[in-house]
Image (tube, rainbow, N blue to C red; front, side):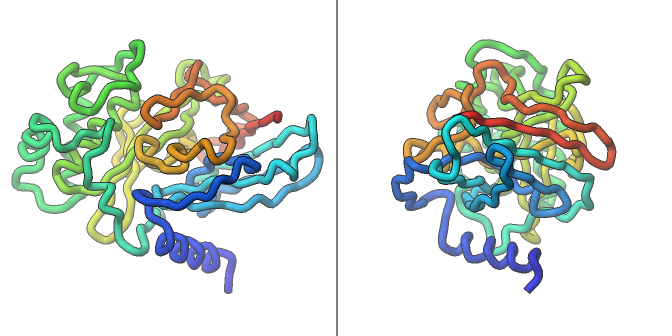
Length: 302
C-alpha cells in the first residue's frame, strides 16, 4: 500500500470512529499538541526537530477538517525546543473530500455561527433564490459578504456572532468568515471556518499574521475554500495561506484543551474560540519562492 493510500485509509477509519460533534478524549496532560491543518496531505510537508534530533510525531485527525501533531512531553528533554518547519507548496486543486459524508454540525447553528437567526435565514433565502447548486449559492453569498462588510479592527470583535456582524456591516476576518458560514448553513450548504496564517498583512518582510477564512462542501463531497479579504478567489489555492485549525468555533480539540497542552503560548480562549494576544502567532518566514513555495518555521520552548 502506498503512503498516500495509507493516509487515505487512516483518514477513512478515523472519520468512522470520530465525530466532531461528539468525541471521547481521555485525559492526556502529558501530551503536547500542535494544529497542522491538512495541506501537508498533498504536496506540502512538515519537518519536526526536537533539539537537534529528527522527530516523527503522531498525527490525530479531529474530524473537523484538520490534523493535530501529538508529541509526548517525555520526548522533549528539559530546555530543548521543538522546531516545526512547514514547506507550503503550490498544488493542484485536489480538494479535500469528506469521504463518509458530512457531519450535521456543518449545517447546524452554533454559538458564534447563529445560522438560525431570523435575519440570517431571510437573507440566505434571498441570496440563493433561483440558484441550484451549492457552489452557485455559495458564490452568491461570498459576493454579498464582500460587498456588505467593511474591514474594521475593533476591540473584542472575536466575541461577535454572525448575526451581529450582519447588522453592524463591518468586522475583522473572523467576522467575515462567520457571516459567510452562517449564511451558507442557513441555505443548507455545509460550511465551516479555517483558522490559520496569511503572509504579507502589512509588511512583506513578516510572514506571520493570524487570519480566518472559510470553506463549503459541494454535492460531490469536496470542500472549496474561499476568502473575503486578501483574495476573493472562490477556490483558494495560494501558498501565502497556512491552514491550522478547521471549524475553530466548534473544534472539540480546543474545547478539550484541558487534557493536553497546545503549543501556542499567546492564545486565550473565549467560548472555546482561540484568540491571539497580538494577532501574531510566532511563525518565521524562512524562504519565499512564490508562486511555487514558501517555507516557515515555528519554535516552541517548554
